[in-house]
Amino acid sequence: MVLMASMLMFSGEVIAQRFPSQMWHKGFVLTAKKDTVAGSIQYDMVANSIQVKTKDKAYSFSSHNLLFCEFLDVTIDNKRRFYAMPYELRKGFKAKVLFELLFEGPTSLLAREEIVQETTPNNNIYGGTISRNRLKYYYYLLDNNGRIRYFNGKKPELLSLLRDKSGPVKSFMKENKLKTDDVRDLIRIIAFYNSI
Image (cartoon, rainbow, N blue to C red; front, side, top):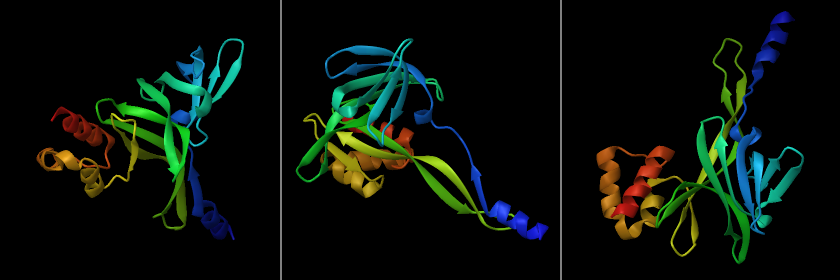
């Protein structure tokens, strides 16, 4: 009986952790009315919203009434910038969506994130599974004409999106052993693409 209870207890173990979107960061937003609101920032990319706490008020901004947000991420001690930009969610329908700017240039690299739950087998003697949350990133390219194109993380698609310079980009990736599913490598690839 005790063994059975122990097996059940370990079969669905959940590992908890906090993500940047669940924390408060010092920063500011620029609203669509060109007002600046500074304070503690919390963001939700799935809901396309930003909350700001000041000393005396709390504000909530959707991507529709927001232009820009900048804050110092307490988890990585680095500045992050979010923009609300029109994006075609389905054919013929555009809406303002929050994107993080990862690299700025003639072709810019944007990202969105969400917390997803991942379940993996537990390799202890009781078996079962372990569930954990992790951040999943979605990448986009923004060109000089304001067109935003989704990138699925695969090398062939990236080379297709960068087709006008795909030969040199492919060589650069091979020489430097860069992977398209690593954000640091992806930034280097886009920076190289913009430089040629």
